[in-house]
Amino acid sequence: MHKVKGVVVRAKNEPATVETILVPDPGPGEALVDVLTCGVCQTDLHYKVGGVGDAFPYLLGHEATGVVSAVGEGVTEVAVGDHVILNWRAVCGECRACRRGEPWYCFNTHNAEQKMTLEDGTELEPALGIGAFAEKTLVAAGQCTLIESPLEGEQYAAVGLLGCGLTAGIGAAINTGAVKRGESVAVIGCGGVGTAAVAGAALAGATTIIAVDVDDDKLSTAQRLGATHTVNSRSVDPVETIRELTGGHGADLVIDAVGVADTFMQAFQARDLAGRMVLVGVPNPGTVAEIPLDQVFSHGGSIKSAWYGDTLPSRDFPMLVDQYLLGRLDLDAFVSERIALEDVDAAFGTMKSGKVLRSVVELAR
Image (cartoon, rainbow, N blue to C red; front, side):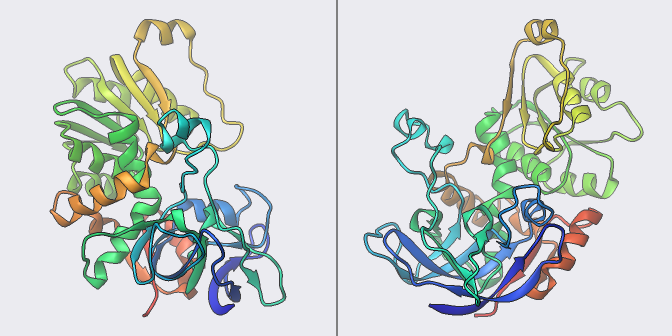
């Protein structure tokens, strides 16, 4: 048993505090990881405010890198000393999605069987089965994706963001949206995920990339990461402007990275004939958007949602790390500030201000 520090939220809307937690040695199929970095993601805030469930207390954090310090019986995926990115899609290989060759939809992903606890024995629910705002965490070995290329110490903060938000955005463009070279792409909402979708579209070879937001600073960042045009939807109609920028037709692919009814309808209407639309912004429960069925039929194309950007970590993480090291994917631009465990609760407020793409916790080793 290991006694370490971790960031816990004990009840809905309570502050996230640094607590002493107990982390077991790994059992069969599990890995113990010394955490190096962990990004502060919107999903962690959803846990904090009760938007994910009520299984408090939660051990927050999931966008992480670390070093494997111990493995349990039967583990072959990773070994002690391996540097890894943690992921929340440890595929089972046996469910109907895996059996039909679509493991990125795995319906039965693995987590550690043993529970981490508070000192009094209260079991903790780790965010997305990871709980990486901690000096050590216990995960299923399949949640560890090996970092095959050597990194400099300061690069782990950026690479760790592939564990969730950046991959969701990049994958929405590359995997779910299937961007082809020379296509036009519009991204509505340029927070961390939306800006990552812009970067993903650029990486895939889109030649017209339109970033839409209400914040000029966010639009400026999106332009640095690949947007060829920016649209502030406070001052102009985004649908009409996207059409104007695409020869009057609409974009081949429109990504809604917000997930509210208005942006969903904007994305639907801003597509070209037979164009594609991807919803990657997470809607609040009960959100409703009404679309006339005759428009669905007459416009053709497709409407999809992106689960984790349809990402298969074992396939996609190594490729994205390589693109980063080759200078084709600027992951460093997403690291707005580097903080300590004690700063996580304050970082939620910074996130809500919209002034950062990611705050990243770095743990001294």
